[in-house]
Length: 102
Picture (cartoon, rainbow, N blue to C red):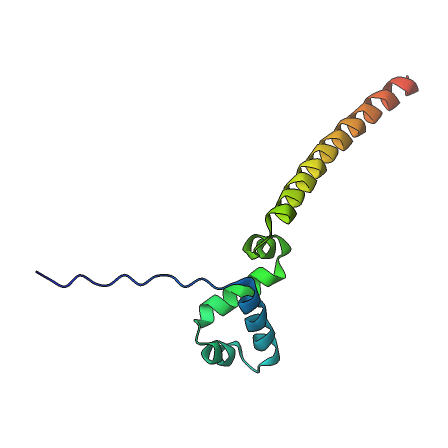
Protein backbone atom coordinates (compact mmCIF):
# COMPACT_ATOMS: atom_id res chain seq x y z
CA UNK A 1 0.00 0.00 0.00
CA UNK A 2 1.28 3.45 -0.88
CA UNK A 3 2.11 5.94 1.80
CA UNK A 4 -0.52 8.63 1.77
CA UNK A 5 0.76 12.17 2.04
CA UNK A 6 0.34 13.62 5.48
CA UNK A 7 -2.06 16.47 5.73
CA UNK A 8 -0.64 19.47 7.47
CA UNK A 9 -2.95 21.49 9.62
CA UNK A 10 -3.25 25.16 8.87
CA UNK A 11 -1.77 27.23 11.63
CA UNK A 12 -3.95 29.91 13.16
CA UNK A 13 -2.46 33.08 14.54
CA UNK A 14 -4.17 35.13 17.23
CA UNK A 15 -4.71 38.88 17.02
CA UNK A 16 -1.82 39.63 19.40
CA UNK A 17 0.65 37.74 17.20
CA UNK A 18 -0.63 39.51 14.10
CA UNK A 19 -0.31 42.91 15.77
CA UNK A 20 3.25 42.13 16.85
CA UNK A 21 4.11 40.86 13.37
CA UNK A 22 2.77 44.05 11.79
CA UNK A 23 4.69 46.18 14.28
CA UNK A 24 7.89 44.27 13.55
CA UNK A 25 7.33 44.54 9.80
CA UNK A 26 6.80 48.28 10.15
CA UNK A 27 10.02 48.72 12.10
CA UNK A 28 12.03 46.39 9.88
CA UNK A 29 13.79 47.44 6.68
CA UNK A 30 11.92 44.79 4.72
CA UNK A 31 8.80 42.72 5.14
CA UNK A 32 10.70 39.64 3.96
CA UNK A 33 13.19 39.97 6.82
CA UNK A 34 10.37 40.31 9.34
CA UNK A 35 8.61 37.24 7.92
CA UNK A 36 11.81 35.20 8.14
CA UNK A 37 12.36 36.35 11.74
CA UNK A 38 8.84 35.27 12.66
CA UNK A 39 9.06 32.06 10.63
CA UNK A 40 5.92 32.84 8.64
CA UNK A 41 5.26 33.09 4.93
CA UNK A 42 5.94 36.54 3.53
CA UNK A 43 2.68 36.42 1.54
CA UNK A 44 0.78 35.97 4.79
CA UNK A 45 2.47 39.02 6.27
CA UNK A 46 1.65 41.05 3.14
CA UNK A 47 -1.97 39.91 3.44
CA UNK A 48 -2.10 41.07 7.07
CA UNK A 49 -0.63 44.43 6.08
CA UNK A 50 -3.26 44.86 3.38
CA UNK A 51 -6.04 43.90 5.80
CA UNK A 52 -4.74 46.38 8.36
CA UNK A 53 -5.22 49.17 5.83
CA UNK A 54 -8.91 48.37 5.37
CA UNK A 55 -10.87 48.70 8.63
CA UNK A 56 -13.66 46.33 7.64
CA UNK A 57 -11.26 43.51 6.85
CA UNK A 58 -9.34 44.19 10.00
CA UNK A 59 -12.52 43.99 12.05
CA UNK A 60 -13.39 40.67 10.43
CA UNK A 61 -9.99 39.27 11.26
CA UNK A 62 -9.98 40.46 14.83
CA UNK A 63 -11.34 38.24 17.52
CA UNK A 64 -14.20 40.04 19.27
CA UNK A 65 -15.77 39.03 22.52
CA UNK A 66 -19.46 38.08 22.18
CA UNK A 67 -20.74 41.26 23.85
CA UNK A 68 -18.76 43.52 21.53
CA UNK A 69 -19.78 41.48 18.49
CA UNK A 70 -23.46 41.72 19.49
CA UNK A 71 -23.17 45.47 20.00
CA UNK A 72 -21.47 45.84 16.62
CA UNK A 73 -24.28 43.90 14.90
CA UNK A 74 -26.88 46.06 16.66
CA UNK A 75 -25.13 49.30 15.69
CA UNK A 76 -24.83 48.20 12.06
CA UNK A 77 -28.53 47.31 11.94
CA UNK A 78 -29.41 50.71 13.43
CA UNK A 79 -27.17 52.42 10.91
CA UNK A 80 -28.87 50.62 7.99
CA UNK A 81 -32.32 51.51 9.32
CA UNK A 82 -31.41 55.18 9.77
CA UNK A 83 -29.91 55.33 6.28
CA UNK A 84 -33.19 53.98 4.87
CA UNK A 85 -35.19 56.52 6.88
CA UNK A 86 -32.97 59.31 5.61
CA UNK A 87 -33.55 58.25 1.98
CA UNK A 88 -37.30 58.21 2.57
CA UNK A 89 -37.20 61.70 4.09
CA UNK A 90 -35.12 63.02 1.19
CA UNK A 91 -37.70 61.71 -1.27
CA UNK A 92 -40.54 63.21 0.77
CA UNK A 93 -38.84 66.60 0.86
CA UNK A 94 -38.36 66.48 -2.91
CA UNK A 95 -42.01 65.60 -3.45
CA UNK A 96 -43.37 68.27 -1.11
CA UNK A 97 -41.06 70.98 -2.41
CA UNK A 98 -42.33 70.34 -5.95
CA UNK A 99 -46.01 70.53 -4.88
CA UNK A 100 -45.43 73.70 -2.81
CA UNK A 101 -43.94 75.55 -5.79
CA UNK A 102 -46.92 74.84 -8.02
